[in-house]
Every structure is written in structure tokens, then in C-alpha cells.
View 1: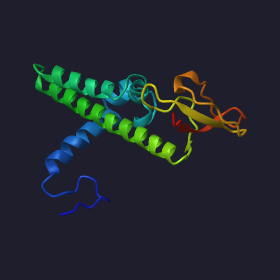
View 2: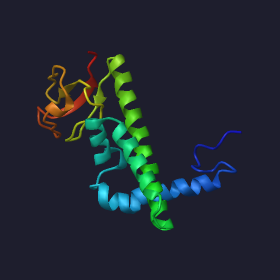
View 3: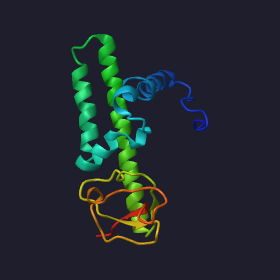
Length: 166
């Protein structure tokens, strides 16, 4: 049996799982996650991703474990909210891992990743990158945290990066 990928959460027999995942989504998009953590940024650009870049994916899985442990002994509604938060941290871990894998795959193929943000991409600690500016200059290999990220139309605005191959 295959599911219709154009209709999220549409697999027969998985309606209960779909309802839980929808509640986790709602918490992130409209509830506590949005109120306390979003900083008006999309989910994949929120502080959880930049913190993971500084400390590794273990930050995200550790946060999920912490929330799961904290759920024990709480009243039902609060315990459920903590578990839904853990689901969102685990989703953040998947997003971080896949973005990092895509950046490394692009580097292996010598490809540049377009970047127009004023913050560093979320990559694991110790990852070196090169960047291009709007005026065509290319940097040597650097740690993302050592770069003054600029965006815009100015010549020194960063427009792309690639993971350095060593």
C-alpha cells in the first residue's frame, strides 16, 4: 500500500498518529513554540537550528529527552504538551541533519548553496565553509562563526556558501 503524498496524513489506519503530529505542528506554529521560540523566523531558521550548529545535533535530541523526562509526574495536559514539544525538537533534529547532509553533498560536487540571510547556516561544530560575495569574491575556508554575515545588494553581501573539502 502506498500513501498519497499530496494529502498529508491520509494513510488509512494512521489517523490517530496524524492527529498527534497535527497537534505537535499546531503547538510549534501557533502555540508555545511560536510564542517563546520562533522570533518571527520560519521553523528551520529558529534558534534551535543555530544552537545545534554550535553544539551539534545532540542539543536537539537532548532537549527532546529532557522534555520527555519532565513529562513524568506532570498533570495530563502539561505532560502531553511536553511530549508534543519533544516531537518538535526531534523534527528539528531531522531538519538539521538533512540540511547538513545536503550541504556536504553539494560540497562533494563542488556546488554552491545560495544564501541571502544575515546569519550563519546551521552546520555542525568544526565545519569549515567558503563563501561568495555579490561582487564575485570567494573566501578561504573559515568557520561560519568567524564570518560577519551580511545580506543585501552591497558588494560584500554573502550570496552563497559551500562546505570546504578539508
